[in-house]
Amino acid sequence: MGTSTSAFRGAAAVTVDGEVVFESAETKTTWYRLASVGKHICATGILQAGLDLHTPVATWLPTMDDRVTLHHLLTHTAGVAHWQPGVPGFDIDVPMPVDERLLLMERAPLIAEPGAAWHYSSPGYALAGRVLEVASGRPYAECLNAYVFAALGATAITAGDPPADRTIAQGHRDGQPVPTNDLTSLPGTRDVWATAAGLADFTTRLHTSTLRGVRDLTGHVAMVTDEDGITTESYGYGLYAGTVDGKAAYLHPGDNPGFQTLSVWFPEQRASIAILANEETTDPLPILHDLVRLVP
View 1 (cartoon, one colour):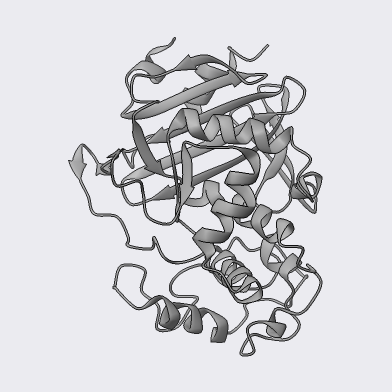
View 2 (spheres, rainbow, N blue to C red):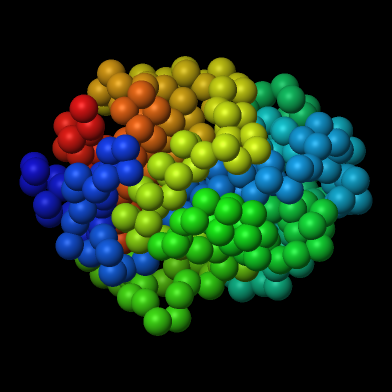
C-alpha cells in the first residue's frame, strides 16, 4: 500500500463481502473510541427500540422544546447547537455529572426552527441517546450492546467502558500524548469502542442485516458536497450518502482530542473500510484513497 497507509499512527481494515482483504498490525489488538462514527449506531439502537421518530422529544425529556422530534435530532435538523458556546454553561473539557450536562443541553436555546435547516450537533445525539435510556428504562450502553451488537453477532465492538483486558489506544497530538474528554458515559456521542477489524465487521453485518430500520439510516436531508474525490448527496440518521472515488458509499468521520476516525460502507461491493487514528493531526482521506483501491 501507499505511504499514507503504512506510516500513520493507528489501525485500518478493509473487508469485501465479509472477508478481510487488508488489516494493519494493530487492527486485531487495539481498541479505539469511535467518536462520531458512533452516531448511526445510536440511531440504530433507537430504531431497534421501536420508538416513534416523529413524537416530540418532550414526551421523554419534558424540558425540551416540544417542536423537536427524534427525527430532527437524528438528522441534525432540530436546531440544537453544537458544543460551546451553543450550550450555555457547558464546557466539554470540564468534568461534570452526566445528568447536569444533559439538562444543559435540553434547556439550551435553539439556533434554528426545528426542521428548517441542517446544523451538525453532537449534543443533539446526546439527547437522542438519553431518550433511548428513558424510553427503554435501560442504560444507553446496555441498549446498544443488546439491541445492536448482540443482535448482529458483532464482537470486537462495544458501548460504554472499553474492555478492561484489552489494549486501549492513547490519543496523540503532534506526537505527544493528550488526554481525551471523559464523555464515556454521555449517551449518543463518543461512547463506542472497537478495533478497526471489529468496526469493519460490524459495518458489514449492519448493512447486510434485516434489523428494523436499517434502510432508513440514509437519505433524509439534501447535503451536496464535493471535495478530494469524495462527494455527499444527503445525510440520514448518522450517515452521509455519496461517493468515494466514484463508488457509491455511506460514510461518517469522527474526532475527539488525540483521535481521527472514519467508517465507509460500499453497498454495491458489500465492502467496508475502517480507519482509526490515534494522532489528532492525521488526515484520513489520503489513507482512504489508498484503501479504496482494494474495493473491486
